[in-house]
Image 1 (spheres, one colour):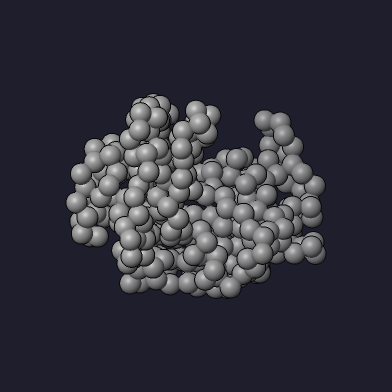
Image 2 (cartoon, rainbow, N blue to C red):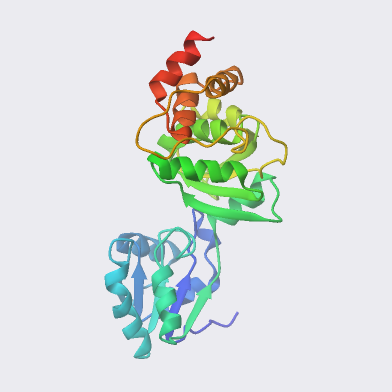
Amino acid sequence: MRTPQLSAGLTLAATPIGNLADASHRLVAALGQADVIAAEDTRRVRQLAAGLGVTLSGRIIAFHDHNEEARADELLDLAAAGQAVLVVSDAGMPTISDPGFRLAARAHERDIPLTVLPGPSAVVTALALSGIATDSFCFDGFLPRKGRRRAAALTRLAAEPRTSIIFESPHRLAATLAELAAACGPEREAAIARELTKIHEEVRRGSLIELEQWARQGVRGEIVIVIAPCSSAPGVGDPGSTSPGPLGDEPAEPDPRFVAEVRRLAELGLRMKIAARHVATREGINARELFNLAVADS
């Protein structure tokens, strides 16, 4: 096979998400030829090169979320001057929940040559393995950590007509699955893809409540969650099944419908405290009061 030559300009290159054997022939060649390598973690790219038997001769520059804005023009100036600039993230494709989006956008603005070396992606790998509909899907990266932004994201996922894919850390997995079960309904189908392409790769399929109960035991590794599309039938977790909560700063009094919803979720296997917290956040009411009413009414 003829060794491909890396062209001057900007090249986004996908790197293995676990198994080094997934590195493309083009990536191996590009690592050895690049004048400049912009890496999310400079140590990781050196380890990658060593594992692939590649000698890096180009200059290595740290390029990550915290310095992308400041460093983008420097990299584009080098590419415009005729150097071959290779951009890699720790794993998978740059720009996909990783640095590179701003860089690619500015390359188009400045008419700088831009190309991609395709390869591994945790998003499509998890989707393919999940057994959940692949004809239409969306990727949401990591959900907001807390507050109304997180509640809004969960409500959006509950009504999403496409298959949804999100990332999550292992120590937050059980809590996130519990909130997804409360928002989408405990019986919504989903899959957890863990340690993709690695020795301990695992894909577990089931309802959100089944997966939440499994995750309580503790899970390790890198996690991708694939969530089945919303059914058109209304029910528990359907954002249209209850009236929206107030938008003001003062919490509203718990409505009996919300108490009943918390109890239904608990009967389906969701912990009542988590069910109460989710419903309360969504509706803008006091979680402790809602929990106490649900417990007293049970």
